Image 1 (spheres, one colour):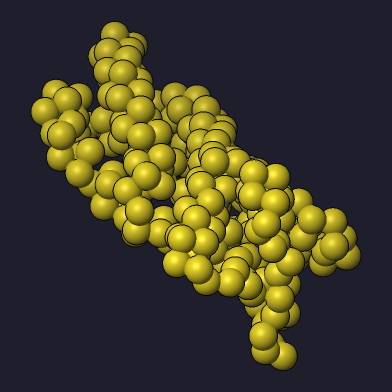
Image 2 (spheres, helix red, strand yellow):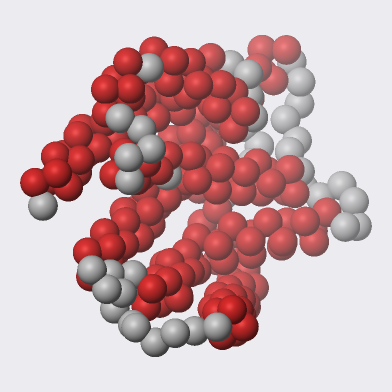
Length: 251
């Protein structure tokens, strides 16, 4: 099968195309960050949802965030802008990337690219939502209960809270992309479905290692909350890999 666009492009032409793609991504990201900065108060209110969720369960919990240094507020603003900017810009990034590589692909490869990009966005969004609605509140709950048990006063700084939120939301969102990588590896023949099934137990150990790295608390409960969806996604990846490899052989 011939590529969609037969026109020959030099190395410098490809670099120019890549530069244009990166510029478009940067412009979109800057515009979205600008909107977030303008509505900073509203975005901060949305990001405080996990705190308010736990406060409803523990009325004695003080959720008023503080800053303890002159530069602390700048870390807060940066975390809010980066987190919101990246998540809201991701569909545009994927679209621009698809535009960049589409001319070099065959019709068959293009039919694979479009659902792959869409699946990548959905998986990231699912991971970010899972972290925001379940993992972050669980982390805050465990931290609060430990402080209360030891008799410590809870006084959390805004920059630490938003840094934790950014790390968890973006980290979990990125980790949810791994099933897609497995399916692509199986599709192009880098790994066999039988191998994925054989090393299922090893994968579970890896998931708990990833959970220990991504989650900021060492408690096994929070890590298990994170690891279980990865196990489910791994099983789903095996099923999808078996389906696409069978379809590839019969196509």
